[in-house]
Structure formats: structure tokens, C-alpha cells
Image (cartoon, rainbow, N blue to C red; front, side):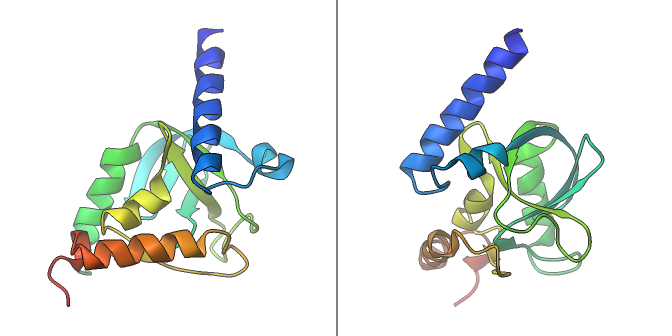
Length: 157
């Protein structure tokens, strides 16, 4: 019972934070599309596996691939943020990408992880229509990260 109460409190907190910052639209479709699951394995800075056995690809962001500049740092940061933790997943429009990965926005402890990865310079904006509900938010976050030369932008420009 305690776990259910804690889960409900987390969901309410995330919903309040998300709606106050323009992250999630306040409608019944969005609320119904939220799921909670435990992260079991970090693949890279924008992809991870969950306890149900499914692979998640974070919507709206792209991080370096293996062998590319800042790959290790981005992967390590995602591990630090959500590795082994229970996260809330929400979808935009598409269920999966062409590789069968679930496309989701990720929230942990009231924080929108997709945006945080851009804020900290571990990810870049990546748009794949029709999942573009928050492009403007991501564009602003990326510009701020570039201007402040954080993360991958530190040694560029």
C-alpha cells in the first residue's frame, strides 16, 4: 500500500511540475499514456532497457554513438540520472521507432530527463515527426547549453 501511495505522489508531483513548465499538455490522453518502470540497463545516452524487457529511445534528443566524441560522458550521465531507478515514461505520438524501441519522454523525481540531457550538454535536439510536441523547449535548451559552453559544447565554437 505504501508503494502505491508513494507512486501516486510521484506521478502527481511530475504532472504538476510538467504542466507548470509546459512539458505535458493537460489532457486525459497524456495522463493515460504514462507508465512507470525500472531502468535495468543503459545502452547509451538516449537509449535504455526497462524491467519489462522493452527498450526505450528518448524522444527529441540524440547523443553521440559508440566511438564518437562525448559518447562515454553522455552514457555515464544517463546511468547516473536513471540507472536502476523507477522512472515515469510518457509517449508523444508514435509508439515505436523503426527499430521497435518505445519512444518516450522520461521523468525521474520530478525532472524531465530528456530536457536535462540537453540542458547539461550531453544531448542535442533531434526531431523525428510526428513526435515534435516539445521542439521549441528543446531548441531553447540547446541554445542555452551552446551559449554557456557546457558538456559537448565546451570545446566547440
